[in-house]
Length: 120
Image (tube, rainbow, N blue to C red):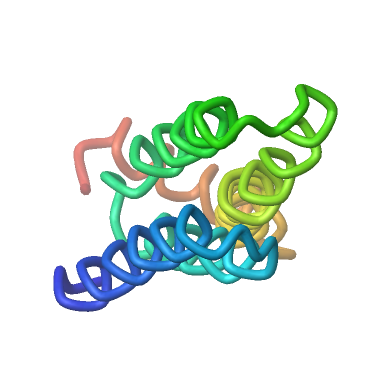
């Protein structure tokens, strides 16, 4: 995908993370987690940023004097929506795209057979 949607979703994730710090409204963390998930699906840099985002939620929770129990619960939201769902969905899509085709094995055998004979 292009860089513009990635920048838009990353900016939205950072904006709503800052809004959560200012208002302490947990729904802002959910919206930011979803924006982080969409950024992760746009470009590979989003994978790294999603992990950094979860770390930022933990650090901000400590600085805002939340209890450790609350921090774990709040950090679970972006970890689940921002990292886990996007990563599992992306891996499942690629698996289904590559290996779940009905004629995948026959196609791969034919291509490798042609390559071995010097045709491809």
